[in-house]
Image (tube, rainbow, N blue to C red):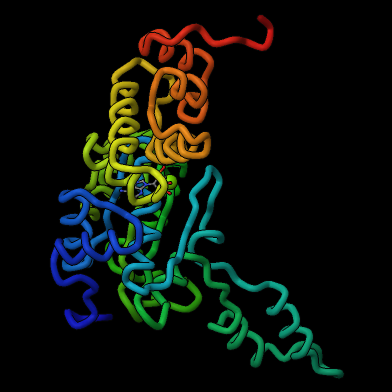
Amino acid sequence: MSGPAGLSFASPADVTARLLANGYLPDATIADAVYLADRLGKPVLVEGPAGVGKTALATITAVATGRLLVRLQCYEGLDESKALYEWDYRKQLLRLQAAQHPEHGVDWEVVSSGLFAEEFLLSRPLLTAIRSESPAVLLVDEIDRLEPETEALLLEVLADFQVSVPELGTIKATSRPLVFLTSNATRELSEALKRRCIYLPVAYPDEKREAAIIRLSVPEADDALAAVVAQVASALRQLKLRKPPSISETIDWARALTVFGLDEVDQQAVSRTLNVLLKYGEDLDLARSELGLPPRATAAG
Ligand SMILES: Nc1ncnc2c1ncn2[C@@H]1O[C@H](COP(=O)(O)OP(=O)(O)O)[C@@H](O)[C@H]1O
Ligand SMILES: [Mg+2]
């Protein structure tokens, strides 16, 4: 287990500086949470709508700290054998065959002592992260997609940085990973899980930070363009849209404007590129009317 010497960040300002150097602009709350997670050795539960930078926070933290990224993408039906470990049945079978004695069959002495040993264990992300030689970043992405019962699989790892394998005993961490859990909040997570985490709700950024993110991600966009893009995105998020624009979509939108060579964001520029930002017909219609644009030409009309 890495002690204080193994800490990754000197201060919240250091978190900000190093994430920024790798293309991610955190706000003060995000920087504080990452710093605390590193200091306290606790997982961060990052919760918020799609496209606000939850996954990127973990992946860029890994890059910024030079840590290995171990990622577990959650989905319905994910089980222990995909999250923690699984026994390598093929290899076990080979071992059994190799232990066949020509006259008196299988030599059980040899077999029973050896079949459930380390060498037959296949590591899955949670185990891989705690067994990593040097400390890793463990990303458990979209945890709200797991069935609530499956969440329990994570608790031992998150609280104690260990995994119990009945046949082998408890495997303790050789290094302590920095853990990020992300959730799109499609359902409530369990109290037990939340108790073990630092909670980091992430919302859409304010205009100033979004403009800075755009400048960072789209070097071709100047300050004026980035400011208008951020302003329109923020205005659109006030509407009752089926899918408000995410940060990745505002970045794409800024890029689309520069691709068209539209460095001035006038009505026409918005009209030609709005489909990069909004992905539902009803959202496009609502936005166009709010922004004072003519109704869109539909394929049928
Ligand atoms: N704070 C940020 N700084 C820089 N880029 C960001 C930031 N937040 C989001 N992004 C951009 O938005 C994209 C989508 O973010 P992502 O992490 O996939 O969202 P989520 O996981 O919340 O759905 C990222 O790949 C990144 O390009
Ligand atoms: Mg994500």
